[in-house]
Structure formats: structure tokens, C-alpha cells
Image 1 (cartoon, helix red, strand yellow):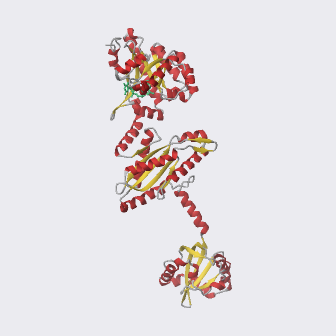
Image 2 (cartoon, rainbow, N blue to C red):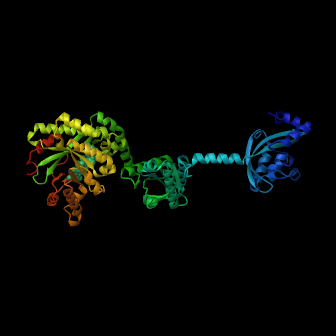
Image 3 (cartoon, protein in one colour):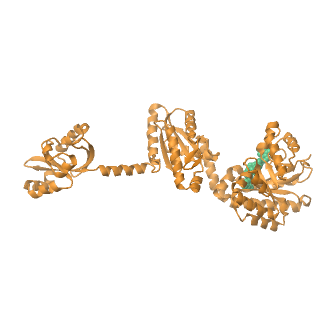
Length: 577
Ligand code: C2E
Ligand code: CA
Ligand code: CA
């Protein structure tokens, strides 16, 4: 379409050149600047004076480019030529954003709305000029918010993925790899829950400051949300270099953090993935570093793990396990094995410890060390634990009735933290004892030292209720949980189980056996029966006997066995031979 036709309205207006039109332009809130085809300013309103700081008399007749920052003038001249040559069709009615310069030299962003007209065969154009400093600032702030975490100001996930992408692109030239380090603060929820979110946020900010002080100039740190952070490092040439980085960044957690009056230690679990294109993508590196971090958590937190392909399989298996567990109980996939506990005096099996196994249809027999912690997390330990308890008690009742001479056989069941918290536990035990007509003193419930000490008041209340029923109580894994002896004395315990870690040292020499010896003596002082765990050699037996330990269990006598194989062990002379 012919431009002259399009703009005939304005054309007519200008041609009329009436005072009304001039007044309109003059009083407009927006700066309006007109120029001729050579780019010389022909009109300049009051708002333009205010905006640029030039009175009309200083600019009329001068080139438009005085309004453009020096470095950009040439480009604008070319643009102006094109604009005029094209008949202005391309830019007509469009908004153009560019930089302008004021009389005092300050540069600011503007938006131009262009129009053009012809009068007496001469071409003119004008621009409504708006200062968009404020708009741009808002825009930048919003864009920044979208790409940065508001608490720490760090790049967020979207931006860090972009940065990893850029780093990967540079890898090809440098023949190096990109390392992604994924941090997760350990037990951060505890801080939030106990000290409040304000304290949690303050801790995160302190952690970020520490980490940032350890970064190299080219490294990028990002907060993914919550207590998860990512550090991206370029120019990493091998895995040792990545490990070195991990160790250095872990140093951020060595000193305590000061939160107001409080000093606290925090730790983090850290996963590392290393890669270069084409195999590695931003997403794959993040996913692998995340998996490695997950694995570091699984392996006890406050450590780092480097991703490898086996790890993916392990993580998948773990997730699989977690997913399949709720149905395993319904499908009856759990089994209980019983490990004989033997009197060190007579060699007779005095009891058995019930140890649960999961017979997974695809993965075979899974150890409780693998699934009990998961069951603790997802709460399944409560129904699973009651099932084990009931099952083991039924089994004991069956042995007692089938072998009346061995009605003294004990059955020992492990209790988890969650079970101990359950106020319904004593009632469930009482009901089972009643229904099965069991002698309550033939049931021993084991609680690990750390569980017992965790919530001492609850533990004590629950233990007193259980004790009242007549069952025996054992403290398990003793020596690993830093008990307060004063508290230990208040718990109504009957048995102390010496952890395998101490039993292992017993035959090695006087120094190594000192702890086992101290623990057994403590048992005597507190009038507890001592049971050694994980006994594997006759030398250990000799020493344990000498130290006055009364009972033991371990591979030396038997592994955990199915109930059918326990029957043979009931004979008092079975292990003595
Ligand atoms: P725990 O209660 O300390 O059980 C002793 C563990 O040591 C058992 O491992 C047993 O098989 C193993 N063990 C026994 N003798 C020896 C030996 O001579 N050498 C070695 N190396 N190991 C020996 P298991 O059956 O894998 O159970 C591991 C842990 O899982 C148990 O440690 C217990 O804390 C937990 N657990 C097992 N069953 C249950 C359950 O029904 N409920 C709960 N809450 N936890 C359970
Ligand atoms: Ca145990
Ligand atoms: Ca134990």
C-alpha cells in the first residue's frame, strides 16, 4: 500500500498547519520530534525539551543523531537511510526500542513510535519518544526474579541449566568436561521445624556465603529450591579434579554457623557428575548429580559420591524397593529367620532372634539393612513390625507346645523407633501373649541404644508399660549410641547386647578388647545379662567367657535360619558338641 495514502490524514492535518494541531503537539505529555528526509530536526515540543534537556532553539536544524549515544550513531544513520529508502513501510506504526542521550550526556532507554508523511513532495517523519527507564527496570527485575532465587539471589534451575548448556558448548573447544556438584543440606527440615523458617533461611544464606567464597571465578552456583544447591565448574579434566573440588567445597561445613546467639553445625550430602558433549546434556548432568547426591544420603550423609552407571542401577533399585514395599506385606513376601542365641556356659540354645527378610519376586532375598531404613521413612515399619512381632510370638508358642521340654526358649524381636513411639504397642503385645497363652518372660524385645536415647521420656514410659506385662527388654547394639549412663540406669532393662564392633576386637589384644570388657562389666554393674553379637571364632568365645559374658550369637554357631531348621538346634547338646 502506498504510504502517502496511508498517512493522508496526518498529511492533511500538517498541511492545514493550524494552531490547534501545533497546540496539540506542544502540550502532548510525550516528547514528539519530527525530522526531514536528511534527518534534520524540524520540530521539537515542550516534552522533548524536558526529556532531552535541549531547548527547541538548540536543536532545530541539527541532525537527529545528536540524540543518539556516540557509539551507536553510525548504525542509526544507516538505519535512517534504510527507513527512508524503504518508504518507511517496514517500521511504520511499530515501536522501536533504542538508547538515547540527553544534553548532559546521560544515556537512557526510549521507545519510539514512528510515523511519516509527505508534504509538498518532501518527506518528513516524526517520532513519539517515551522514556522507558522505569519499564525496563521493572522488566529486568521480573526477569531476574524468574531466573534467580529471591532469598539468595542465586540463579535458579532454569538459569543454571542454561549455564550448563553454555559450559558444555565451550567444552568442545577446550577438550575438558563440566562438573555438576549437587548439594543437599542434611536434616535441614529439623532446623526449620525446631528453630523456625527464619532461622532456616538465615542458615541457607550463611551456607551460600561460605560456598561462594570457595568458588573459582568461572564457577556458577545455583539454588534449586529448599536446601538444594548446584555448583557448575568448567574446565575439569578428570574425576580426581572433581573430587578435589568436592572436598574443597565440603570445607564450607567444617566450622559452625552462627545464627544469632546460637552456633550450629550443618553438613551436606554432595553428588558429582562429570561429562562432556555429546553424551552429556544439562539435564543428564543434573539428573546424575542428583542421583549421586541421593546415594551420598543413603550412605550416611555428610559425604560425597561421584556418579557412575552402577549407581544409577542402585538408585533405581532403591526407588523400586520403596515403591514395591507397601504391596510386599499384602503379598506376604516377608519371611522371618531365627538366629540361635547360645549360653556360653552350657552351649545350649537359650533363645532365637527373629530377623526379617524380604523375598522380592525379582531381586531375591533383600536384607533388612536395606529395607528397614526405607520402611522407617515411609512408615511401613509399623505394620511390618507388628507382623514380625505377632509372627515370632506365634512361632515361639508353637515351639513351646511341640517341645514342652524347651518351653523355656526365648524369642527376641527387634523394635523400631516408630514402634516404640506407638502408644498401642503394649496393648498389642498383651493381646498376643493372652491369645497365644505365652509365658511373657519368654519374649524379649530389643531396642537399639540410639532409639532408646532419642526420646527418653517416651522410651521410658513405653518400656515401663511393656515391663509391666512381664516381657524382657534388651538394649541392642550397645556401645554405639553414646548413652548417658544415668539414663540407662533408669530404664527397666534385662539384657545388654554387645555390638559386633566390640566383639570383633575381643581376641585381638588387650587394647582392642578393652571396650568389650568395659561394656560387659557395665552390664554386670547394672545387673543385666550380656549377650555378645556377631561371634565368629572360638577365640572370641574363650575371651568372652573369661570376661563373664553369658550368652552369644553369631555365625560360629549358626546364621539366621528358617524355623524348620531351628527344631534340630533345640536339643540342649546340639551346639555343645
Ligand atoms: P541386629 O539386630 O543387630 O541383628 C544382628 C545382625 O547381625 C543380623 O543381621 C545378623 O544376621 C547379623 N549377624 C549375626 N551373626 C553374625 C556374625 O557372626 N557375623 C556377621 N557379620 N553378622 C552376623 P540382619 O539379619 O541382616 O539384620 C540387620 C539389622 O536389621 C538388625 O541388626 C536389626 O537392626 C534390623 N532388623 C532385622 N529384623 C528386624 C525387624 O524385624 N524389625 C526391625 N525393626 N529391625 C530388624
Ligand atoms: Ca537385634
Ligand atoms: Ca545388634
